[in-house]
Image (spheres, rainbow, N blue to C red):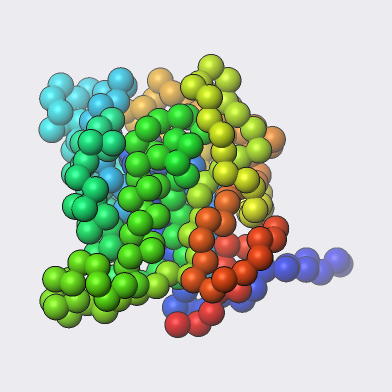
Length: 262
Ligand SMILES: [Zn+2]
């Protein structure tokens, strides 16, 4: 029998990953494979989603804004359960209007979560708006990038520190990316691929299943499955955007590579 050789590093129970998204379903569609993989490897995984997705064209049976928000929060919770997420939270920022959200408030909210959860690794979108070109994705990523930089500073959001929280410096910030474009979308110029995370066929199916928990979005299921399955769907790609320890760029296959014990 051939022994499987894994190049991944052993994960200690104190390892934590925080994923910052824009809409319920991003956690599955964009980051589902990594969330599953690292949950299986004993990492605590957390998701903060900035909007309840109430601007969606597909609204299921919801008749009002509040009904849709309620449905989408429940779908998000079901998806997070399937992905083994330790904690999932949906904030109240306005869907499709994140570019008009108050920057100080949005970054403050994210810094608060980073100081509470204390993750070593943060995943989010890059400023290109993600594969679908949705501006909310870019804004969630920009807020998350500032929060990554500022959570460790003693001169940002001091009121949180006065209330007993300590500054926290996450070690690595990744943007979701890909080596392909989706057709019929606005043009995007993506961050380079610096990490290829093998999620494999089984986790890919589970990620699709997590997306399918978002039943209000059922009309998108076929298209999303096709989009997610580009290049076989067994690999999620990321761009290492920042690190707490200066280093040269290099290709990785593990988002926790070089992460030091806190
Ligand atoms: Zn989205």
